[in-house]
Image (tube, rainbow, N blue to C red; front, side, top):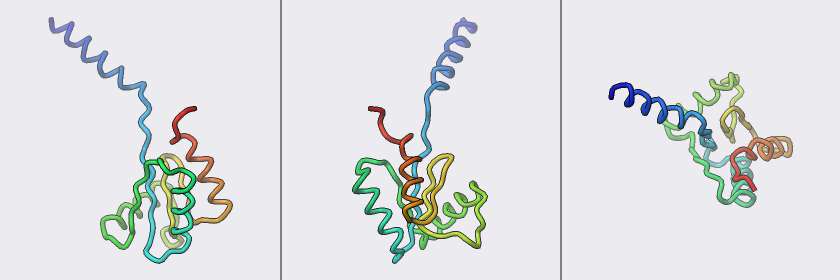
Length: 114
C-alpha cells in the first residue's frame, strides 16, 4: 500500500511539472509620469484582456517590488525610471517606439494561442 501511495504522489507531482506557469506582468508607474500614461493607454487599447498588475511606486511596498524587479535584471538603481514593465525573463523600461516594439515582442508569450 505504501508503494502505491508513493507512486500516486509521484504521478501527481510529475503531472504538474509539464505545466508552464507564466510569471505575471507587473507595470510600475509613478504619478504624473507621461510615459507611463502613454504606455498604459497603448496596452489597454491593444491588449485589453492582458492580465497585468499596475503598481504605483509612491507606495512603499510597491517601491520595494520595483527595486526587486530592477535587481532581478541587474539594472543600475541610479538609472531606474518608469514605466518599468517586468515580464518573466524580460523587462521594458521607458516608453518610446523602441520600447513599444520590445513590449509587443515579449507580450506574445502571454497571449492565448490562436
